[in-house]
Length: 123
Figure: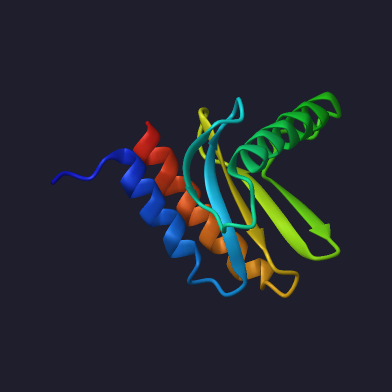
């Protein structure tokens, strides 16, 4: 049986779990819909997708208005975790939720690889 794009995206996301402390990840459309997800049961998929897209859109607008060029990533550092969001082409973003103890350098490296793979799959 042939794998769908969504199946391939889910495999990419599951690969991110190899980075210790990553709890959830998703490829989200820029209008806030889940394209593919590897999300723990404690996280509501629809809220995760909608809030991630809103955050990405607001940050891109701010960066543009302030003349800072193109947005590379968003990193949120909260009391109980970190959220990192990066673009995955014109159609989507890749968002990851991790424990506070995550190695951000390794996480960014793996997220950038995964975002490029997702962008390629989504065309």
